[in-house]
Length: 113
Image (tube, rainbow, N blue to C red; front, top):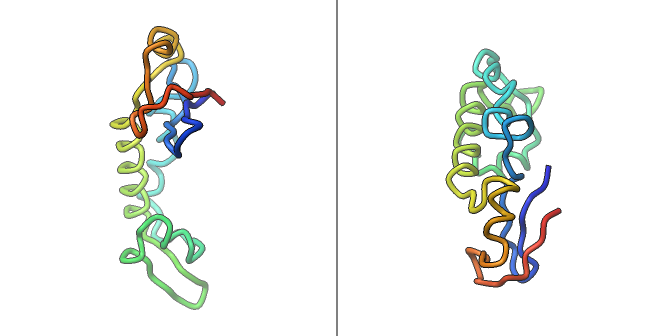
């Protein structure tokens, strides 16, 4: 897996996709079962960082979120990743790397990690 990022600003995108390796379907693998669990206990910071404080519940064991709410969050997060992929595959990157500029700052100082 490799992801594209800019050295002149904080722009980056998710890992390149491939049918055999990483792709949006694989990103959701295993997440469907989230909907079938009543509670997932998470650190309070997760709710703040994920902007899910309105979905947070508390009891004597700690902070939790309903499984279906966690699944919905994962679906939205994956959809945003799909929507914002500037270059989807390594093959596509090889075709555009000489002309591609950072979508955020316009720099050509890009790298793959």
